[in-house]
Image 1 (tube, rainbow, N blue to C red):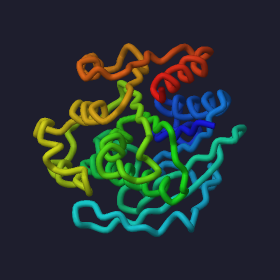
Image 2 (image 1 turned 45 degrees about the vertical axis):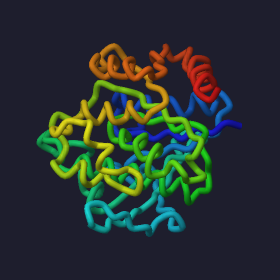
Image 3 (image 1 turned 90 degrees about the vertical axis):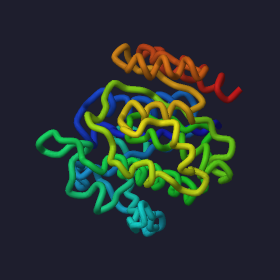
Image 4 (image 1 turned 90 degrees about the horizontal axis):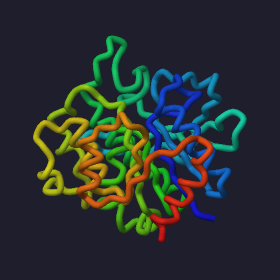
Amino acid sequence: MKKVLFINQEITPYVPDTELSLMGNLMPQKMQEAGYEIRTFMPKWGTINERRGQLHEVIRLSGMNLIIDDMDHPLIIKVATIPQTRIQVYFIDNEDYFQKRKMTADEFGKDYADNGERAIFFARGVLETVKKLRWVPDIIHCQGWMSTVIPFYVKTAYHEEPSFANTKVITSLFDSQPNIAFEQKFKQSIVFREATSDLMEKYGENFDYMEMGKLAIDYSDAIVKTSDRVSKELINYATQQKKLILNHPAEDKISEEYNNFYEQLLG
């Protein structure tokens, strides 16, 4: 049975319904029904009601410290099962980056200044947890800008890890995006093992969502265009990079078309 790791920015019912959260819920279910073995991750946003969502900490997976920009950040892993499904969701949590905070913007609608660091922590937290699970995905499918650091790390810092050595990476592009550039030290903070600073030189100094999208495209094996609202610049960039591109199909065609897409990618 082929294995797919979904890395989501949002999943309903843990956060309000949006295009991202609905897709985060739908895609794992559809592909599980199509015969794939699924794991799925998302950030434990501070707005998530742990009691209502029946989240509980997984002690054996928690406790690791991730060093980002010379600071230790404890990794906490929580888990829950989406109601009426057999889909387990692993939540990446940390007091500094997620607890007592909203999602990507504060109560005044202003993007958090450390969103880039939060994405880095989320990426490394997911990949370290998958290693601990001793689970080897055939495909990693990233949905939402919060997961856009994942392809870069999989193909550089983690490329020799047994869990990821032969994994194919897909990034689904959405029109939802932060409004401001990431913090100045983002390029410094992302450096880890073979994810070296020279690999970041090709991207603009003003490292914004567009540059983050290009980073994800460069290190992904395939791209999904989720709607006609997705940035034409990013789709053109993916085309120029000769990436395999899927236009997200109607709901009744998801299982069939994504199955074909996955099989084409896996060869």
